[in-house]
Length: 75
Image (cartoon, rainbow, N blue to C red):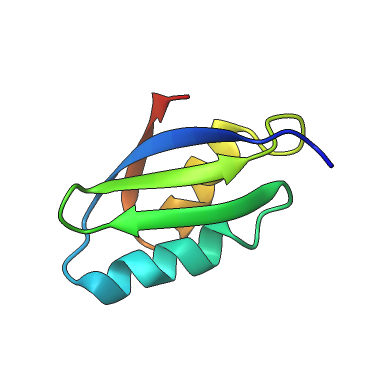
């Protein structure tokens, strides 16, 4: 089993809990992502990812494709 790391992303443009669920569903479709937990209150997404299969840029692109603004805050 591949080793995963938790990466944190700042997400802007969310208005309700459903926004977080949409982001999580979108990000979890990426190859290498095992889990995403987005919280409206903090404006952050914590993504468990295999860094050999999915880059922070891939996660940011998926979040932006879902209609939100995002930036990687680090591991």
